[in-house]
Length: 113
Length: 104
Image (cartoon, rainbow over all chains, first blue to last red; front, side, top):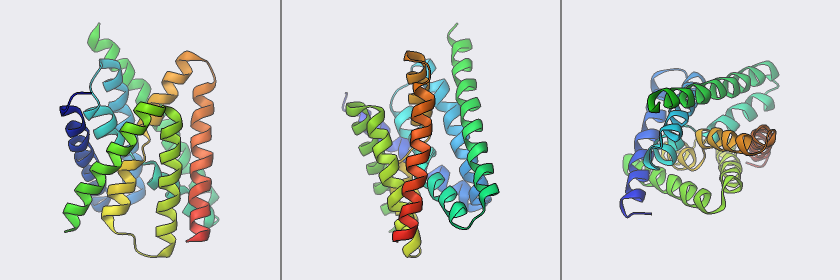
């Protein structure tokens, strides 16, 4: 670990968390959470495949996406007996993140060929 | 003040997650995700959660993208383990949040 690595992770985290918060302020918070989680998985798929550093993977992507907000979103829906919405948001997140990560990995493979 | 707290907590959350997962692997990511989900739900049930804590600290401490990365890595090593890790993360994390809502 170089001395610059933690600084990069912190800067990436501030940008990622800031972007997640900002998007939640301008569009519907549930939709915003889905967007940042899917985009974060797309970018980390590409970043891991292309060999980018921790500032982008653990820092920016790690903080752009949020599991605590996702778990709370689903738990609140379940607690309010909104089972359909819970399954819908969770399903959209899992499928969106899976396809986005695979897409990012594929893009990195094309880029390094 | 809020902006400073947001920056400090987001940076700290990410550093903790990064260092623990670098040392202890996917188990550490699972642990911070469960802990973050539980803490956020307890605070949410108790009242208005400050943005610096909810979106900043706990948002950055927990992650979905690293879970995706670990799922892919596990799946490449041994078929089925990635799916099991993803399922474990979702079930324990959402259960922790639900429990937090009841306790908060």
